[in-house]
Image (cartoon, rainbow, N blue to C red; front, top):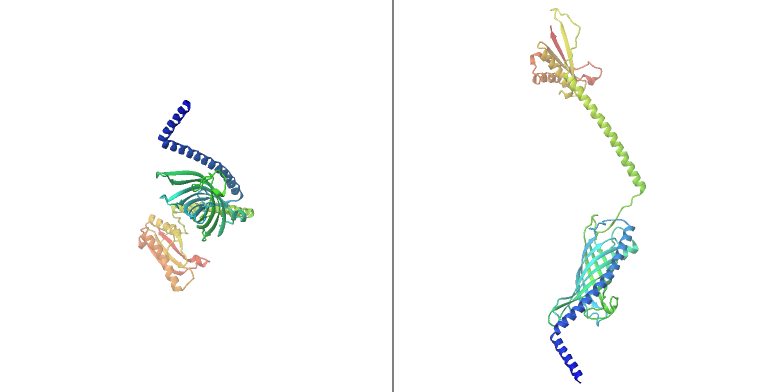
Length: 438
């Protein structure tokens, strides 16, 4: 009896100690349980995501190797979507009665016309009398398969209607308020299986309207506070049905479209023909460069010859000596200035002939010059007389104004139509004759 009394007293003392430290024990136990759950949830997510990413990498490599598209940079084919709808547990009483509103945003990257990934965040509005407005939040990484492009192939432009299969994995948090008005967050592993029925709007396909039925699984075996024992299993007892509508905006790509475009295939014969044309044009360009260089050299040679002629002294053409009645010898020098048809102005190419007369007159102060103008036979006789006189006066005016030769040493007369040359056009000239007496 004494031993039994001592054991009873020991239990009472322990019970008293436990009652005094009850709050600490409960908090510690809650911490341990939540820690184990979070650890288990994390291991489940890592296990699923490892398989998902390996599958995703293999899919990207295989699909990318099968076709080449324009607009395949990392910055291309991004879209932002907004989702609204309802969600309810599959096996928890009245399905329609338990519907609750949910919404969210989704950022999508389209890797190929068949494969895409997205970061999807959803929140559920609290349907209980609790003061918490949002009590469930899920964040998932979705893998999307475009079944339409997979089975019907991609033609370079999205179809008006397409179907996607969606698989996703991530985490969820339930927010609850305890009896002492404190918030409690429980984390669980979550997964999504569903279909997207997409309607691509407009010619540019900038917007997509989608209807998205799906099943969301709690892989920890709990949903909406219910507990279970089927961990990491896809069972309807731990699933909720989503009925969601989404509106997605597609950003502009580097190919000036909002989607993948096919690279235009080139026929090898066409490529060879274009290369031959390019080579032919290159050869023509080389030949033209050679001709231009030769013409440039010819121009330089003519400029040198012109400069040499300008530097030469006037050549005096000696005529036979004629003895006049006064016994004076007369020597003559002639230069010719040509004109364009119907013109009376002196071209730059004829200036050396005028300058030669001026130079001689400056060095021979007793010499005088007689200028006679001529015209070709075109036109009326009156017009030709006027043009012939104007041509002679043009040479006289230049000698006086430009070279400073005294006007009384110059005589200028028009001779009408000339007949010195057999070619009529050659007679559009003015002939300057220098005379000097000794």
